[in-house]
Length: 438
Ligand code: DOR
Ligand code: ZN
Image 1 (cartoon, rainbow, N blue to C red):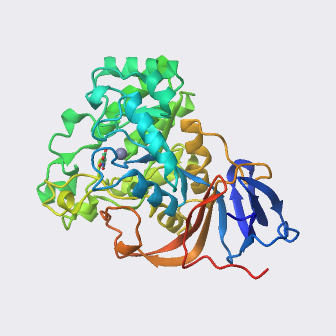
Image 2: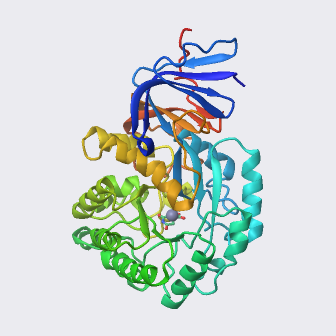
Image 3: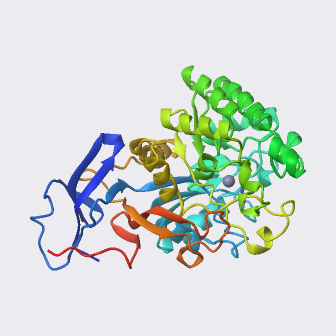
């Protein structure tokens, strides 16, 4: 353990306090003790580590609202250890884990087990999400008070939609009793049976069953009505359609408590990437069309979409190296989110401050994690990024157990150099973090 860690001449960016300045940031123990120009100069001692990377960003620790860590039950794809290591390597200090495990996280016992296990591991901090209904079957509500008491930060049946309106109404009412956000996977399953991809010209050309936009839009429209009626906190997972964006925008303008997240892959890829039947591009909801992608970007930029979340969905070769109709949906995302999003910033698509906000303050509000700031006296949960450093998405670089991503082999720009969780180094890019001369 170091006595002090000095980030020298970093560009500290914390939109929540309108900070964007070149400063030194000093960390002692679990706490940020100094922030300011040359604030590190006066720090002395043998066990002081100074880090200086030209042009590096220091950010509040990133939070992922949506990851599938597969434990319990599918540890061949991912487990808590590899998942939390991948999260830290991606710059995330905190990661929320979806409950579609085996068994489903629908009880206090599973939540407690996850919390207990994660505490003993390094890497990012875990925040379990409990299911809305028992077994994610969409019928009987879980004991949300128990889930919350055991450490769950939200409820979701992600992977499945809560389709029944009566169940959804009661779920919103029940969750709001415990001030828990309800995260909906919006998909009218009756409209998406056997769907392989987005329904459009390309699905027609490929002869594949399509997942129409309206299957998402119908659920979002109904849910907004129910959110207004119940006053509950509703969060929309992985929004993918221009119609859903329009409904969200209208709902927000009327002051309804709705929030939403979008994934990097829905901001970057369209259904055209399935022209070669690449199963790595099969995700749920599916990759849409240019018009959706543009609407999602615009909505993220103007705050209609609050958060960026990875929907990290690791799958084995057995589940992906098969024909498209047999392949399971999902792609890994934890270690790619930062470079992919910085790529959109570099192209002028999104402002840097909004991207950082969407990965820090916005998700912390959704699940009620304490606010984090780059300020003296605050907890040192920080992410150091070198935006100029390029790297190849090579299989051996990744900490996740799975390799299902269409970005494999591509060169991306922007590298997470260090992730500090409450003052402890949860990740550092060993080959790459130089030690400044003192
Ligand atoms: O692509 C997806 N993968 N979408 C989901 O809703 C579930 C997830 C998974 O668990 O693999
Ligand atoms: Zn998911």
